[in-house]
Image 1: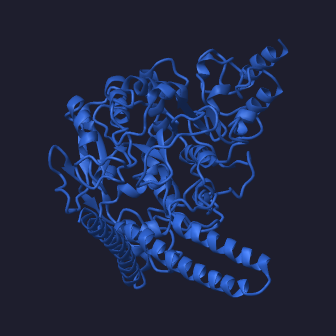
Image 2 (image 1 turned 30 degrees about the vertical axis):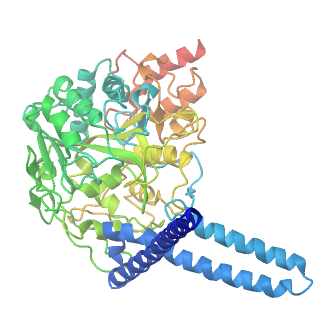
Length: 591
């Protein structure tokens, strides 16, 4: 009796397990079929819907279902062929068919649409700069790396102060500003930035004036409510706190003259709470579009005010030939005197990479379809083709108002909307998180550098990701032939900055570092400690440095050929690069 009871119990258990497994398998197939039907029904009538969040979720399931079916059919066909051949003395063909079947089966089981990617290879050779370098030190990008800034990125809350050191980040931010301007302290560095901006914008040699408005544009792409979302890419709150401390305590800007504006998404609690605790009078502006998860403009935040007809796209949609809708932008940017673009260094599921240029997509006041249309235009970039990013990079209320570009590279991600921080394997990271900040006054140069850092680690999408950088660097005569005029006033954009790729991921040298061209200068150590006259940072004063000085000779502050580091005489500079600088330089070379 005990034996029969045991056998009956085992039979019931086996039946339940069998039923559970088959129900789960059938349910998975049903979900895959429904996802495929949903994707096709929604996307075929309007292809731009492919970028909707619901379609982003449906596509991997639908594509996996299709590949699963194709794999099953392939396996069945191959094994049927093998069974037929096994009856004949052709053992080699039998083995080949069996191997092919196993390969198809393995691919079907292991396929992951987020992992199977291409590998971006630039069309332009290394160290071949194009465009006109911008900034006090033209083309300068400062890279601050401190491994103590981050640790243990495996936690869902990798962004908090248990995994990110605020003191180290504040030091990194301070050093970045001083290195960029080559000034001895943060107060004089910020004054230098404001003065240089005002000189180049026709306002004269004046610094920040009390009452002027400064807007920070963050990247809150993943924030769809005030609640904290774990496990998604985002900038650590310590970065915002560090920047606000710089602006308030070092640059001397009143809190009520500063706005943190993300008009297409929310300012979530993990960002708002620590910032508002220290800086309650800063304006925190978020989306004015009601999403189901939350009510915007509540809990201390302000709702964005829309301003229409500000951006006039320079070209129709190159995919459809139809005009691109004129989406409203936030009033905060229209009213601002200065803007700081604070982006992230990460890959992008559609555009390959998202940096400072892509960050401008968040300046629009959210509507159900605005970013879907715009994302269509970055999902398949091509060389010699119009880019909406260039219009935003040069627009009078956005890129043209930008005082400073910052890229948060403390943590980095392959996909912009999902995943955990990933370690970097090449030097100097060597299996650690990137723990880096990048700053520049040149929007093209900083995106070019960050893209090089990304592609050295990740297999980015196999598409011309840097095509917008070619268009922006040559905006006055772009490869596409487009007349870039984002205000629609008949005034064509000039070059927006300089673009090039480094020589290799080990040396990370650009043309100004090598003394071979007027491209990018990547600074990764304090330039104030370097030899005066060692313009390319190789520890020597030689003919390469003389060549750099010759390229800036007889220029004055604010002119196209101006290079601040070449203004070495009298000590501290006099705003002119002339024969006195050349004589001192020649003497030091002879010594």
